[in-house]
Length: 208
Image 1 (tube, rainbow, N blue to C red):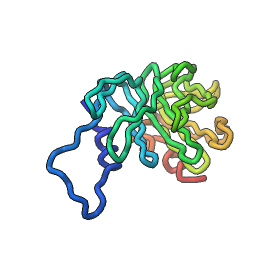
Image 2 (cartoon, rainbow, N blue to C red):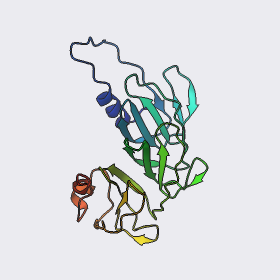
Image 3 (cartoon, one colour):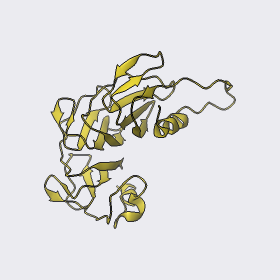
């Protein structure tokens, strides 16, 4: 059954133009065989992640999608964009300026590349990029600002450096930000980061 997160994201992305007629029959939609945990829209594409391994497209065909997939935001059609994570994906953030989709979760591989809970994938081809960082616990949420990628979750370290459930990375060179080191008193998720973080990830994400 299609998860609520994906339904909401698709509804937002496919709002009819003013004056357009709306049919009485609901549109068919892509479904997945496991939970969709996160969706992120960039332009006309909706990227989704979760715990699924297969999707059923608008034509009723069952196809492989390993916890990551992309849909056309205008039609809801499943796109050919494919990249498999070996365990659940809980976070997606898109850097449209650089054509990069950042993902976080519980995985240890994405495609054939070893990636410990953090990875970056080309927004068009799906190829795993050279960006390579290791979180020692689940990554639950991510966000992109003008110059940084922010990540939050249940980790206490990134690349061997102490990070209390929050971390930031430079979009320019991909490095772990050594100066931005707030602490969260509990696991940082999409809904809890705002109030749990000593320096809120979402407040910080609005800064350059």
